[in-house]
Image (cartoon, rainbow, N blue to C red; front, side):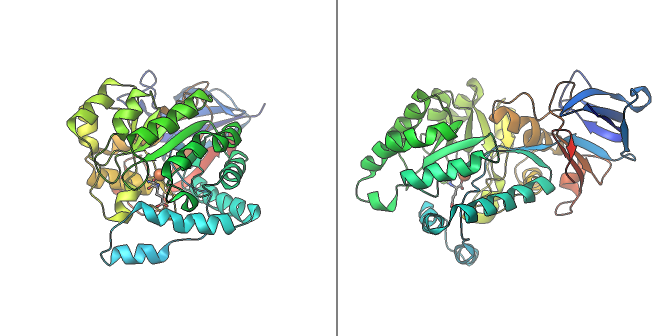
Length: 389
Ligand code: NIG
Ligand code: FE
């Protein structure tokens, strides 16, 4: 196999505290050796072993590829009008999801796949090397299953979100829709997915319905993640912890009991500041969660309704500016935190044996991701050892 060394890295984030200093395991004047799709060696440039190829980072920063553990990328159409209305003062409601459902149902497989590939490529160019994505804009057995099939051709992290909102055909029979989601639709979707998710929120699914959806998915061998406490207080976060979900996502409106539950459980709190940005909602309080000892992930929630950004660097900048995170914490959450939210140990870190997913910045340090918001700093991306930009 071909070996490549990236040398003269001014500042290397390993997220491995045994390799470097502080929680990010930082190394100065470092080198990383990639062998095939894996990291083979990490250390000082002067000690780097001989390799087939070398890339001189020229003092610039390298960090693990971003792990975006929450997106909704199988959809058609956009919701510019809804965004415009919000920016003139209208509020966000879960009901807008049905606009995208209509457009998605009307689209061909090829159109849906082309959209997914476009957003995946957009994300990759901004440093995202692992990306979770969901169904949830089909809401019929056929349309949910095809969304997952299309997603599964492009990522291993696929989530069944038939319980996004009640399908229009079931507007008068929400429990009938839950029966579909936990029965025939689950049977058709489970083979294509790793995760089951539910939008536990007023206007979507209540605590009992959400429990039914998650328990059915778990019984079918899927693992759980939950859209929880985005638009208001509710049972989502505590349900996620109780059922051992990998992640409770959004966590915008939390009581002390929610924070305690997260601190005592094993569920990661995934914060999605693109949604608060784009809905003009209050920011989730990352500081409160971190101070309570909760593991925090940071992701984009990329979707056409509440957060139409594929940029993890943008989310890092928001989290630092408005959610009380330090740049180190935000970068950890967007890499190792995302990996934790997906229960992955092979990504989100740069250490021997890890997947060779690396980002080279046109900057001397990862701090510049927040310090220079909006600037395209990603100068190189390696995914599974292959340089893709
Ligand atoms: O994560 N919260 C539910 N789902 C998406 C919004 C989807 C939409 O508005 O289309 C979210 O924000
Ligand atoms: Fe979402």
